Figure 1 (tube, one colour):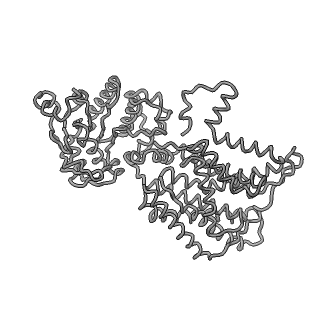
Figure 2 (figure 1 turned 120 degrees about the horizontal axis):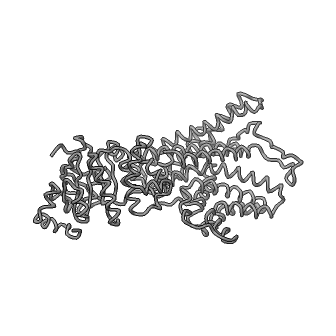
Figure 3 (figure 1 turned 90 degrees about the horizontal axis):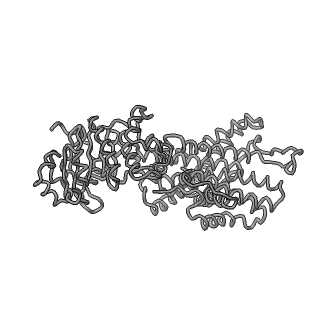
Length: 352
Length: 241
């Protein structure tokens, strides 16, 4: 999808021209580098490393939650405001398996036993959110394709129902989520390393970063290199022509919606283990970040969503450290700033 | 005339509150190129869209190979062997030329031999194989649109004004391509306003006016019969002669 407008342009000459070209062609990287550099000069390097890893971890989790929503918007032109409910649902489903499993294997702290609890928990969160997503698309979304106003009304309603269902099943109270032993604690960087020696990096955050990168890599691969990916990109551009070629676009929509819901569930479960406490409304609170991320990244763009999430994660942590009272403002401020610079978002998907 | 591959009987279609087709009767003979002529707004494009199931049929019947396909969903109609090239060509401009073709080859990997044949017909497609289709010129896009339609053997091609806005040299290339398809006994229904192009290629012809077919017959007859042309010129062919 990239490289589109670069084909016939000559390479820019001179440092300033190259800088300008970089800023215009790779606005996501430009912003990321700029933000990390500014933060680096405003704090102690050791703090900076810790905050950066934490910011990346938060970004990775927000990306998991937001990627599904940006895809449903980009391909299906559906504004699903119930997306947050799927985040909550995934968190509760994952927590249930985790609690059950850890009780069964109480006291075991080997890595294998812990993984045996975490992998099914994430898998269950993925499956439950995906399955509910399947029903949700059939019952709630299908009748309102093509009408944004109705989509907003119906999905907000659907969201309330889903969250009440969580109350019915898991009760109205907050639920503590135990984090398996093997995922608590931190890695210590060797003391011998210059400047950042001895810095403690939380294990769970590193795992979140790795998982987020893996999902991003997989999604990018599917979208760039598989027939399904070609169909999704074609569908974003012209649904009618996809049907003219003999593909059932509604089936594709359903698949994408289920995948998006499942990813929201996965992100929710990851977030549950990160925060170690969950409520039915956690999804709603996270939706603000999710919406900022998909607008910031350019609606419908996976790459934009990834960089948007990383930027939101980083600015949250950096500003939270420098001036805690401004942390919440910073996220929205970032979005406003980017939109003033590029109203179409960082990496827009061009609709024809 | 042999059994038609496609026949429309009394087909009616509306777009919003407007009645566009008022009972279209049309037969497309098997293995022939049929031209659908008529002035702007006569309902030619809507007829093609209705055959493809893109516009809802409100009355009448569409039969393909003798089977009733009226009201079937578009993907199902396409899978039965009908390819459609719309007036705007429907190119996926963000996809590469290759990806456009991969998508058009519905049943799996592209057939090497067929692809080479397409490259011979339309060399620019080979040249720009891995470029975004949006970067192609208008003529090249039309080549890609037709290439997509024929990358797999299809029984019927519906093509909407392929020559619109193209340079004469490219129109010639397209005509050659249609000649080859004719030799392969592919049935084609071609909507055209360019009468010279139509006369060169068409075997049978139908003329539409105001949402219905007002003349149907052999192209040779229409091409030879000045009086008949004169009569139909009033329907808007004159501007293109």
